[in-house]
Amino acid sequence: MAGGTLMGASLTTASARVDVAGMLWTLARTDFKTRYHGTVGGFIWALLKPALMFVVLMSVFSFIFASSPNYRLNLIVGLFLWDFFAEATKTGLTSLHAKGYLLAKTRFPSWILVVASASNALLTLAVFLATFLAYLVLAGRAPGAAAGALALFYLLMFFAITVGISLAGSVLFLRYRDLNQVWDVAIQAGFFVAPIIYPLEILPERFHFWLYLWPPTPVIQFCRAVLVDGVLPTARANLLLAGMTAVILAVGVLVFRGQVADATEKL
Amino acid sequence: MALIEARSLAKSFRIPSDRRETVREHLFNAFRPRTFERLDVLRSVTFDVQQGETLGIMGRNGSGKSTLLKILCGIYRADRGSLRVGAPITPILELGLGWNPELDGIDNILLLGTAMGLRLREAKDAVDEILAFAGLDRFANVPLKHYSSGMASRLAYSVAFKTVREVLVLDEIFAVGDAEFRERCEARYRELSAKGHTIVLVSHDPRVISTFCSRALLLDEGRVAFEGRGTDVVGEYSRRALTASAGPARA
Ligand SMILES: Nc1ncnc2c1ncn2[C@@H]1O[C@H](COP(=O)(O)OP(=O)(O)OP(=O)(O)O)[C@@H](O)[C@H]1O
Ligand SMILES: [Mg+2]
Image (cartoon, rainbow over all chains, first blue to last red; front, side, top):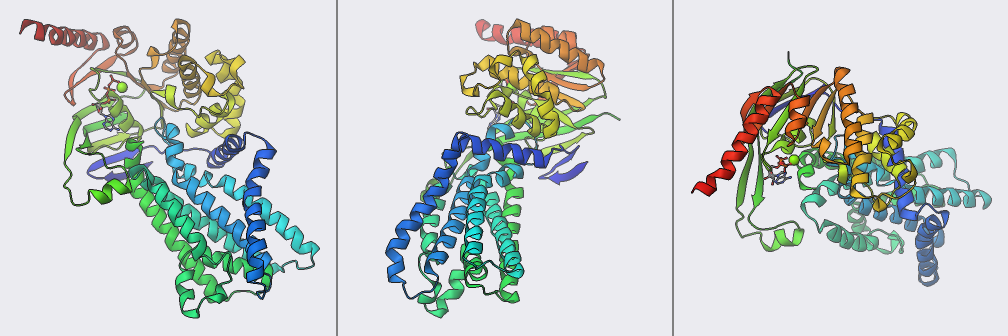
């Protein structure tokens, strides 16, 4: 039983229980099917986009940043992490709208739709990471246990950050129907705010703090540190990232909970 | 104690004077005052539903029947009043529209089935039965966009009938589908009622209300205007419809 007083109306209803894992899986599987028409070729196409981007950027910028060690590896790690962030938040923003047909008909915990919308981006990232790890092992640069555990931790934080942004965005999108265009602009600018094509070190030290406030920056930098450079970020740095993630996720959950009840009327 | 207790439920929608649905529209109109027209759909609705009972709801188009059902199911939120629902509800609302057109019948069944509370395992096991009930076995692998609207509704009702929890809430259920499918729905519905499920049923059809509902309400002007046995409410409903249509003619 769930009870509560909402804006003057008192409500006591038996909770609608659903098979969360089963529903997440079904949503992820059918999203994959509609996105790539159920073919492996379609999925490879999705991997090709950041890969092509890498080839183009690398051929230009690796000359400019020739002095920077590991530029290529850093670039490809940054690109794929960025691609995940951009894709997951873009689909997350429209997730409630896109699946509105389910929400208008029955009641279930609607955050499931938002979390499931990241599945395609997550799959692309997973395939990249598997390939990248295989490369590291073959090149004799396999990360150690601590580095691997930290990388996993960063990815978890990154996922939580995208979920937080998507939760808030998905309900606000129902109110502001051009929010996706605004977010597209933010994503385009954010690509250059995050040190993806340039090494952070070329910017004066005093700017670094501000750049680290843009969530993809710490995740990309820390992942590079553990996977490419073999350096472990300090405990303080890790705590700051965890704190930032907690704030973003909490704000996302609060905005979502505050808006979602009214949102179904606007679908 | 009644299974469902609704006390003075009220719901209004705010219809804005101008359309502001985008960030751009909000920014450009930030200093222009915005007025809202309030549409009081439900003013004060009070009723009980007993365990195992079938309650009918009648009322003219736009009288707020679907809105009331959505509040019962927790899809909309009431502005005022109190609502206590003592058991899980399965809503069967205007289901014809709720599909992903790109996916085939089976995937849509799994999506709607899990959303309506089946475990994925149960939904998979029920696929054949659901398709058979809908009479759509041959269309299992056809994308929903190639279904006729009647076929899509049949599929939705078949899924919903399979997922029934304790309370069933039906909106215009017997209005969709052809005579043969309607017959099958009514049979299934009688079966559920006999098993002791509690049912709340909205319909414009006098035959449905008088045969299925031991008790019924008539919604008008946002209140329960009349309450009684199914047949009595049907009588009152048609009497009001007649005076309403005769009214302007006399003037
Ligand atoms: N989400 C919404 N936003 C704004 N107005 C709404 C919304 N939903 C319903 N309404 C308004 O509430 C009123 C009642 O609608 P409702 O669908 O409950 O009527 P109904 O009794 O089910 O009618 P019908 O017999 O045609 O099915 C209508 O005037 C409708 O315009
Ligand atoms: Mg209606």
